[in-house]
Length: 361
Ligand code: F6P
Image 1 (tube, rainbow, N blue to C red):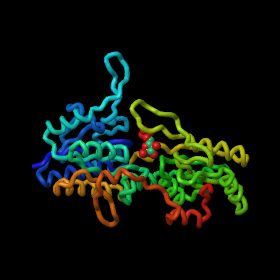
Image 2 (cartoon, rainbow, N blue to C red):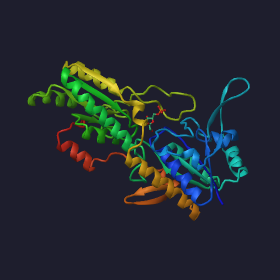
Image 3 (cartoon, rainbow, N blue to C red):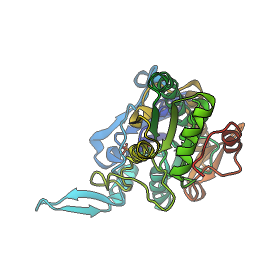
Image 4 (cartoon, rainbow, N blue to C red):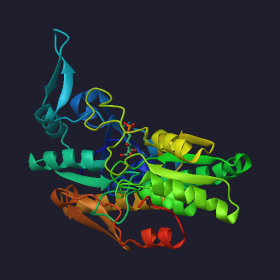
């Protein structure tokens, strides 16, 4: 008999519930108990936010977006902002308290579902002696140690559908539509959706772009009687010699700046340089919502089941990973070290260039 606690941390991604579903079912078959720590580590910190998860709690949740146990990207237990009696904000380390609560509850393992930030926290807990297993999640698909993270396929499907819809309105008005998609450090969502959705230009963090090249591409469209254009920009893209566009540090306790605004910047440059009617829109959190695609559901369930197999084998301090076609695992130390960026020798980059998509260089 084992007792497992699951948490979902960082920005949500379609497929989180499917992982929870698989973990609860795989544990039930073994006669093990599962608990959910609500809102990242909050459940383990304030014990009243720990919930017992039975089969009835996860019935049918694999098709739902979001996470039934909540998530947060402001809850680093090693640097948590708390208000003291004088009303001042202090950053404190509450990890010892969490470890004690984990031990007091008699948990055998913590399954931490998260992206790079949450997995780094999981690694620190593993180093403190907590038996931890990581499950890779992020719509950005930027973890090097796994071929795929769940959530990415759904985000790409949402972005591609949006591009399909924008074509008709852009064409009706002979307009340039600039679409900002997510992708903080890596341009995978922009690249996959941009190619699939017939973009004229795709701008990604890995290639600082020359706005003049983008404008040339838009003007060249007229040579073959196309008077509109679709430009896809990843939120982390930047102009040559420029910087990422952000809205500052965001909320208290957030470790990353809030990106956003590069789409409108690109649109205003295009408007000025080409004198074409240009509009911009930000797809934003739409990409994180909704029902996971079949691919993401299946991947998420495979990750969840693989995590439980690791618990059974007593392999801790690892993250489950897809090394196609197999489920594998990699030490958290290694998993958190490197990001998967779009490399210039990737076939999707060749494909984009081959079919005339401008990458801004
Ligand atoms: O890491 C995933 C991600 O969706 C990024 O692409 C984006 O910059 C960030 O999360 C947004 O986070 P928040 O939910 O705090 O706005």
